Image (tube, rainbow over the protein chains, first blue to last red):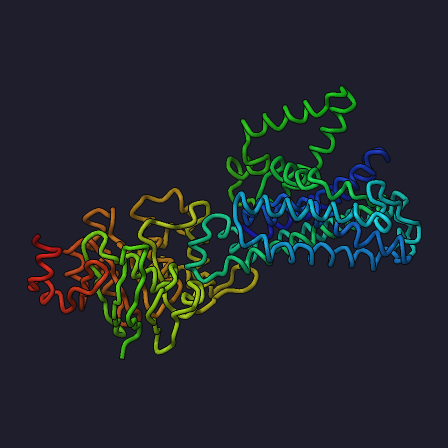
Length: 313
Length: 242
């Protein structure tokens, strides 16, 4: 399967997403910016879960870690958005590396539980230091922190541009990574870890690297969320934010490059639509997930890969 | 001088002496057979050699270097390859990717960071060609016939470019016609690669091995040429004739 075709298709997705801001009404263009940031988070989750088989329940910690690594310096010390975003990247990556050193001694269900416990500890830490973090209430990021190269991220154009730019960066890095030599090893870990050991790979090291990359994505997404939408709070460290990226990935197609953004968009607008129709919107979302699991257990793009185009990365 | 050398290798499981003080030498360029009744400790012994199970006491040297404490993946990179008794491939990947993983992970570490490259493709094609599967590279490995999956396992072992290749019951489940081809393949590997062949099929082991080691109750019962082994009364009693 030709590399040029794959790259052309994924670049076309990026162009279409950029054009969408002009085609959608302003309200939905802002929502698309939210979706792109959530999709960035989900792409990181997908690298760990979809490609490498690491089912983590602790990614909310990396997302919130990035959010506060960007938000706290902006709030307390007047950092602007550029340095804050870099800190969010580091925050997510360092936390994922630290958690991985312990959690990757386990596998399967134990790994899920250990990552969940770390995320819960992170949430309680944010609550405990409420003098700094605002605890349950969180805090609004001041305008000084929401400025990048002189552009105010609170206005629609720059906000969308930054959300799209970060997403595009993550999207292309993800595509290059999964098509690389290392990407092949990631899938080998998911498919048969013991065999990959006997082909010369150290599973602990491979999985730790993937978890750190995944944490970089989650951290950057968390930081972008705080700066683009102006709010950081401990609620982003709750289990809900570990489950959401998993749902996006499962819906769009685990182990596909474009699956997370497709899943994030569908889920976002499904919730939007359902909550407009009924107060029991969670029921509709649940029903949609049941249908998915019954008829396309590998997600939408997973189904496409199975039935239409085997070479879809 | 031996390429792979074990001295006093021991592994007990509770009261069971699975491997009990085994001395072993694999010479450069030979095919050595490892046989023994069921439960003799053959698979445990090669698991100790490959590093899948930690050694309790004793030492292992590969080309003069002590590898007793090295993890399995490091031994692979030093040139000690192991193919699984129970077929253990990546069923969700293509045949090409299965072999490419071995090529880029093994001793030579061939391939660019982008995951392709002419050198990698050539090495994959060479390994598949050796087992006669060159035209199946694009297939999903899970869709292969059982015989082809066994051969893919061997191709992955070869693609690691090992000094020593341990084949754990490679002909198990192969059809008679496939076995003849397989014996020719193993003979064709030496002297570039030294082979340790664990095998239940006596015809195969007598046909391809230069020397044979017989294990029984975790100890070496006999060693020698195929002719010496089939004439050995102790072996006959324990294994062949009894």
